[in-house]
Length: 442
Image 1 (tube, rainbow, N blue to C red):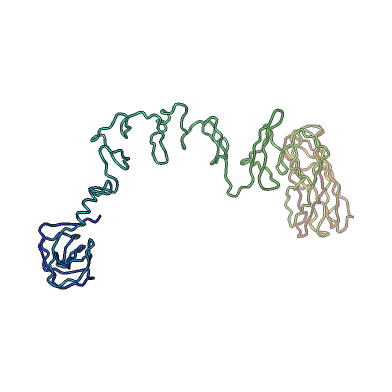
Image 2: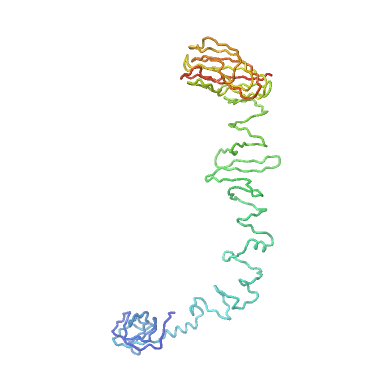
């Protein structure tokens, strides 16, 4: 219902000008004692032109009005028509309606609470400081035991520490999101692991690293009696390898022993190779460590020297002398030159402490073409790192045969060295298949 204002001191006034039956404002001669809008006035009271209007706003002596209020008719009024502040039937009806209403009264939107009526109270704050509650009523601040109560967590908040909840529980404890706890008999379905799994001491046991577009993975499979567990590769690819990568110079081991790989540099001991296929192997510095042991090495590729008379180590013809003693040494060198009568070849050895006696045969540097010419023979004790002979090379292959005895008083590397006898832009080359055989005989 509409709230209206009233005054007991409002004087009777009159219109200063006529109004039609549709005008929504009027001006009176005086407004002494009138209340603030809204309030009711009656124009031409007690006459056939009587009309009740609701004043909704006041500006000086001008009223903004709602015409024909409370079932009266909006009619024209003359200047000087009497205007009175009055009460009319709607005032009495609103009073009766209010008295009979049980809700929406006295500024409240809900129902009026009766002292003896059975009613549901909503959004009420009842404090025990000014109210008396029965002993069985649960309150927000009193320590009480609740029995057979269901608390809907969707619309209620239960607060407390995990320790307090665990104290209240009689059969188990809560697990926290960030705490360190031991979970027993839990099944984790597709758990997400961050950077790894820790052991009981908090140290990384297994590290993990995510790949954004991963489609392949490892699968661990246990097994029954007599069958080994498995580490499998699985994923969407048809063929999936398992790549085990050691760190730094670490190696891949099985039961404490290094695993042999196809590309790694490794020492094989006590291995039997049954019908092996060996394609151009590279044997780097094999070692003799006892009487009767023999090493045979050969060049796996051509090797050339151009415009240089500085001795350099041969890429293939070397071995390690691992024990003192006497060694029988045979070399067969196959050489060519990019042009006849060009750079030819100087030969030398570096070797550990000892005495090296060497004999050899090859063509002299007087060789002009082809493979015919004077044969050079020599037999002498040679010095480590010093050329012991010069041999002629031509565009045709030329053989150089060397045989010697080395009495080692120390250990180290036996290394063939060579260079051009005369610096020449035409390459001097030792060919694939050139070889050296070393055997400890005493």
